[in-house]
Image (cartoon, rainbow, N blue to C red; front, side):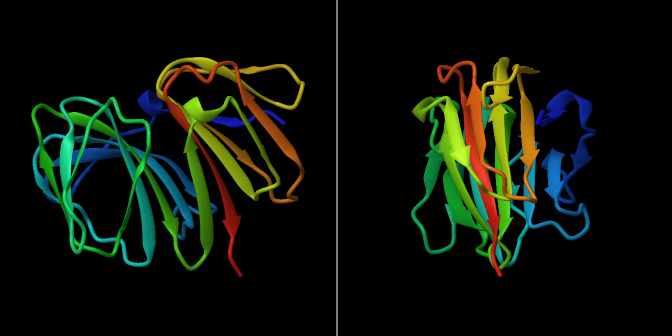
Length: 193
């Protein structure tokens, strides 16, 4: 089954309440107003606090720019840059302050409602294939590639875009990208009863 393809440059930017940046929401699943999973790209233009998301687990990576330092309550500060592939995990209900380390950064964000969803993620560089029967799976890439399910024909996935495979029947999925040498992240989600 071909995935839904969502390009960052086709999603409107929504300004933050604190004026420090904008967010482009690529996916809010299963419902935009009552989501369990949210995937977005943000442009951070100024230092400031992140919005609180009670009950939400978050994963974060710098896509471009000079990077940021995140200070999350109860955890040591962490500096993040565009040359790091691992996503930084933190809890959305803990106060987190973001310090810009230079010019505007563009960042990738995954959010999962802790009580309703289990999310597993890994960098694309660890393997070009994801085999799963999860209720949903996705791949975000920074450079163009092709994606496919099984041995079927590939679907072009442009740079800075998300491929999303909803899988409500939990069919076996054998997802593959044309190359693991580009920057990106696989993720799969399971609902929690």
